[in-house]
Image 1 (tube, helix red, strand yellow):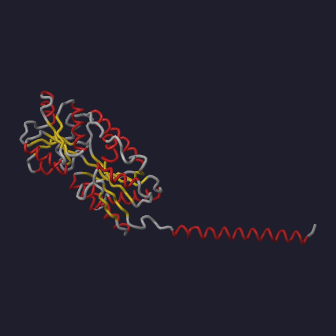
Image 2 (image 1 turned 30 degrees about the horizontal axis):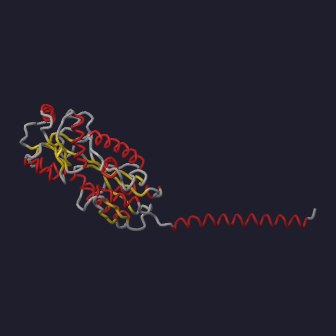
Length: 336
């Protein structure tokens, strides 16, 4: 054997091995450095797109949450109110936005449970176009009648309605209020005339004036009138009693078994947003729902904080969509 050639081969092999080891060591040093240079989310201002006007409940909640996130991250949160078309303008804008976590839809059951049953053609897909982030809050509505009405409870009201089909009327100024009334009709088996209004406060005015007989309205609109002695609260729309009206039974407790019709707030980002960004945003929003500003909002609105995982929100949204669809179909409401 050529010993010189053998030693040369060993030398080259060792040299290549050492070079490879050096490159590997360099790689382990460079990789963390490169990762460290990637900006953490959020690295700039976040935009909360709200489907309703400034001053609305959704807008108030979005501002409270945004303030908390700004405090936590030192990054500004911009509120962009895109009101109109039952939330479709805002939902479409977020669906088409960059999937980077900087455009967040702060919305309600209107855009993500009801609209697909109320409109023949949507400008967005409430499932395919979005990545769920977290639930934000839940609230209920209160069944109210004029304080001078003869019926003192739900049982008396429904007994009168059954004996006098079509004689009673209920008003509504929102999709949640309308659907709540339709569900009452369906589950109780009564015929009550629906009277539409542009807003719940306008319906309350006519209820106070005796033009309509009852309505199921959001607590922020109805409770002040109840506490002022102008309206009488007969029942609450969710399965849990209202903290503002602890002595008022739920409609389920009052005999309308299975009744459960509330409203909810939730956050979504465009489909395709990276999972780590969604997870971080979930973390930030969950903490924000517990902030002093959010607590003040929930207390004043008669609602409560509600946080979920993205998967939990997706399942909840699917169930709510089915429920709203059944109520709308049973009510004979034609999609526009």
